[in-house]
Length: 240
Length: 221
Image 1 (cartoon, helix red, strand yellow):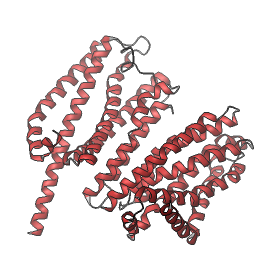
Image 2: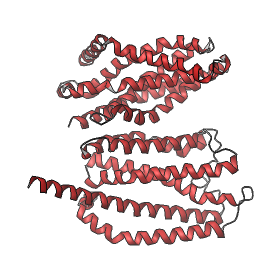
Image 3: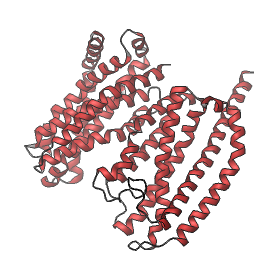
Image 4: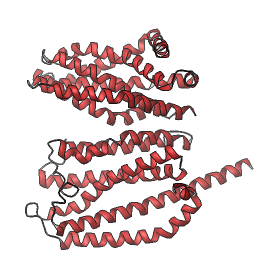
């Protein structure tokens, strides 16, 4: 089943059709989520209005971990089944994931200053997210470090799989260690402990971020496939 | 076992013949630790407080320095390819090279560490714990570093790239190593941290040799 979509041309056709739908879904979901989050949801009894950073910070953090996991799955598929689009998908996801991680750290910093009184603290959750950022940067550096562009995909796929251990560490860091960052309030045994009026905008923003990710990655994969085609055409011209 | 010993002896011979390389790593280690009081100020209490961390970070950096050449020289002159074609499995070759690397860099670091702990005014009682954590931790550093060294074969700017790749992966060893010494200094038993360090070593042993061997196979193709 996987290899049915391994044909790049078939992928390009399908991608061209679904991309506008994904784009509109992102705009609608993000618009609704932002409206509900910024205007229609209650302010926190302790934090006041600055709790609304949560509607960007939490989905960004979720996306950071999701992107790394999907990179790892794509890398694994590329290594095991040698699926041609899997390596391209992993390479396309990397900068997006790195930006989401940076966004999570940055918005977290902005939130931390009024709430905790500090821009940064070396607790388990923040430190492991920082490590995640450096795993992304290491992957991007490694995949571009070879003169032959195809040479970089295998080592970087192995690197992603080695670093995958960090994702469960991030998820459970607030349970395993004594952290300043608050413990899990959505994905936990016993159901979410967050109120519905805040949960819905949060989930809407999370889905909006996800559709945004699909939109961006579709564009990047299409661009990568087309640039490879251009490379082949150029080589053909040179070699007659 | 035979193949392991052959490759181990070969690497040790090569390292001894170029004895300077091993000494360079130890000298870098000593230099980093010595520079610290110039930067932080010579007050003994502050140095004692951060001493274990500094020694560990210096060990990390010194280890990263020496790892680039773990597979690079054999890769460049083609002997890595020949070794992979021999009857000895690639994992055993990797293990032999990692052992040789640890014997020529990790072991000298462990031997030098008490002297540096003296310079940094660390508690006399925590010397043995420091040696213990370094003895458990430096093999893990060599193993994880071997994976990094195998990944960068043929890459441009391999040395810096290696540091960027493996320093995040070194963090668990660093965290538990320093935590063990700090716990001991504060009078708490460091048993849990030592057990975790041992667990990290035992996990790294099969997984890292396998990952490094896979990376070398990719590099040789």
